[in-house]
Amino acid sequence: MATLTTITDGTLSATIDSQGAQLMSLALDGGEYLWQGDERFWARRAPVLFPIVGCLRGDHAVSARGDVSLKRHGIARLYEHAVVDRTPSSVTYELSSTDETRAAYPFDFRLNMTYALTGGRLTQTFAVTNTGDVDLPFTLGGHPAFNVPVPGEEGAAFSDFELVFPERWTASVPTIDERGLHDFAHMNEVFRDSDRLQLTHELIERLLTVVFVDVPGRSVRLLGPAGHGVEVDFDGFDYLGVWTASADAPFVAIEPWVGCATAYDESDVFEEKRGTITLAPGESCEKSFSMRPF
Image 1 (cartoon, rainbow, N blue to C red):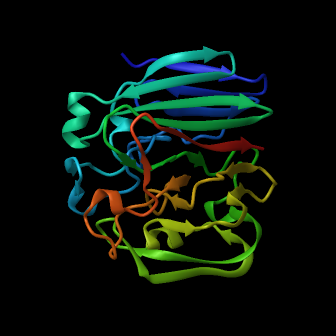
Image 2 (cartoon, rainbow, N blue to C red):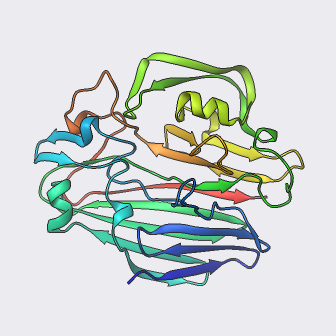
């Protein structure tokens, strides 16, 4: 049975659901920054993406262990995760492979998700261990969605918000088709020699998802006109997805990814997907990103 766990550092609090190990709330001094889910737009809030990000071509790939059949964003979000450690300011979950997961993704794994609060920042850590006897290929990512407007910005419009980067750069993003596949041969320049991008529903609707590659400093701020927002730091994540559900959805998802959906220039061999991490039997790796509301 799914259970909610709330952690706090005194000013910032976070609530996580054992179903999918999904972040359900991120509140600063009582003000809710995380999208709270609404079936009219998007019912989820911050799903865990594993062992894929985005989609496979036809929801299918082949691997050294046989067929892989995964819907968009994989299987971690579909299962109950066990709480294996908890303190007042942190909680760790665990999901291990089963016969059911192996039917879709024929590998043995252990996924530990840790949420930890310190200094007004929530860090979300993925720890993946290969518990099998063959190499374990996977990608992973976060999908936190934030209210727009955020607390302190009441009355501000969606287009009053900006994405602000640590330095000036030129950003070109791949074309995405109606199946969710990425075309890196046809890039779309979204800004040139700037450190910010105005957030508009029109841009996201046209591109479906804005997929940034190699963001300088691996950091971005969602910033409102009164100076409130959320900073997301994602060292070790080469892709950043920015998405909302519709032309009037009052949220934006800022998604650090290791890897992305299947691309036009890729085969359907699972191990050959962009950004794939491969762990030898017994090997583990960790990836973390953090969120700081202000």
